[in-house]
Amino acid sequence: MSLTARGVGVLACGIVIGALGVGLSAPVMVYVGVAMTCAVVLAWVWMTLALGNFLRRFPYAERTIQPRPLTVGAPGTVRVSIRARHSRHGHARGLLARLQVREQAANELTGGATTRAAVTRTADELSLEYALTPVQRGRWDVGPALLHTSDPFGMLLSDTSFGSAEKVSVWPRVHDLTGTAGAMMGQADRVVLGARTPSADDAALREYREGDDLRRVHWASSARRGTMLVRSDEHAGRRPATVILDLPLGRQALEWSISAAASIAVSVLDTGHPVRLLDGADPAVASHLGQRGGDIARAELLDLTVDLASPVTRAAGDAHLRRSAAAAAEGALEGEVTVAIIDPATDDVLEALAPIGATGRAWAIVRADDRTADEAAATAARLSRAGWRATVVRAGDDIPAVWDTLLAMQDVA
Image (cartoon, rainbow, N blue to C red; front, side, top):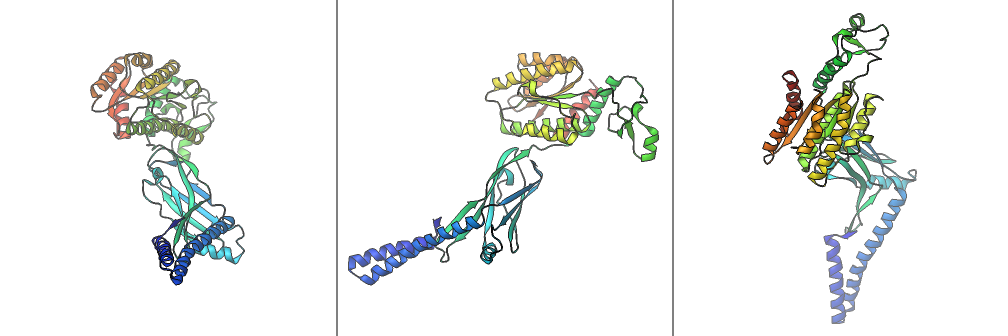
């Protein structure tokens, strides 16, 4: 609770008048001063009892957030329902009609703007509904709800929290790269399938995805359905992919890189291929996602990005990258496609990445800024000589345009 300007004035005047009354031996002034001071004290007692009564009657605020998790740049909504514990009592209903309630949310969820809630009141419930527009990946607080109230004379104000706060996960912004990712993975699949013709055992059909082998189109079913269907080969697996994410030190570069890696990995998943994300954590626990259904795998992959943070030093980041490169090199020998998003690399990192390029199925996005442009160009050149298809970009460049430029290199490599 805090004193309003009126409360400060009444209290100050009461003390001054009372002191003057004592000094002047004027009982009337003493009585007036004591009365004014007591008015503030009584206001405090009233507020304390009223807030206690409120918290007993309205101990909880039920919160629903949609969608959950949230995604950077995508709007979400929060609905808070406040019900009285004994709403059948008329006093509780009267309180609901007078309540002034708002809710707190982290700036990362609102873009720094204040939350403006639409308030709905019924006889038994007060509901707040407001919009969120997340601007940063991570886990951020929503709540608690705040009750704004004052005493009848306006001498005290209180913003009392009730209900609980909770953490809300925010996924990075994801760009749809499915079309070009499908073309890349489809080319790799054709290498796996070779010239083998479809067998009569291929019972499952699915819709055609860009990059699928046209020899697997089931023309009779396609004609009946009016859409192109292909046979799902149950015997030849779909080639997996690995996305290597070298986490940079700068905040802007970090968020851009995570968004790019998530967009690539999710788009590969959407083409039906398993994918794993190597971000410097233990590669042994970085399993390929996609075997248990696209939606589940997509959520699991994006959940992995929520808590990613920059390494403490660039040397630590290079150590993580070497470890990821070693794991990706093993997968590349088994036919995996590899995409790497890295900073200009040291000689030992480039030596670790070189075996992956020898397979002919490796693409690299090399980040650069004004200070590292020459180093990035040198890194891209060395990767290209090792068999990678590499391009130099700046953090903040349009991710779909970067991806299209990178994949266009497969036609000239």
